[in-house]
Length: 162
Image 1 (cartoon, rainbow, N blue to C red):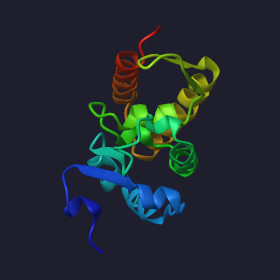
Image 2: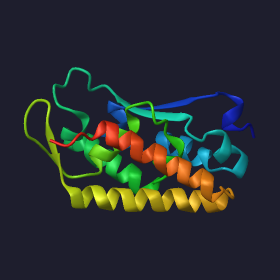
Image 3: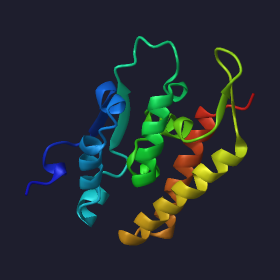
Image 4: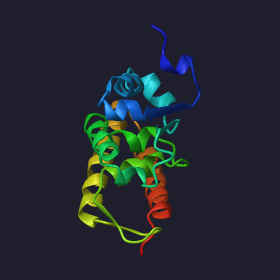
């Protein structure tokens, strides 16, 4: 069987509106599970993945405001919590996942309130998943600390306090 890394240097996973509306997780799960095939694949795709949702470009709401998108992403996150490791820290995918998996209230067109308790739960869960992968691939403490800093830097730039 050919490996995922034989096909691409950077993986973009786009979830379609049709997949969301029909609750069809299989195409996304198939791809995500291939990221975990073996140590070599896990190492190769470190920060080389982006995730997006397509088909809602004409919807004026943010993706996290669309109930079916939020529900789909939350379920996806239940089965695959390894975003901090695989997702690039330069794209919007990680922010989208965090927003969909947290409690937010839109205050104005440009400001949201993010429930600190739900954000804490999000971080605890996902840093735990990073640590599981780190153990599996023998990541050093230094490498783990560097990744943790990238994650906190990413979120400090994307979650401005109001």
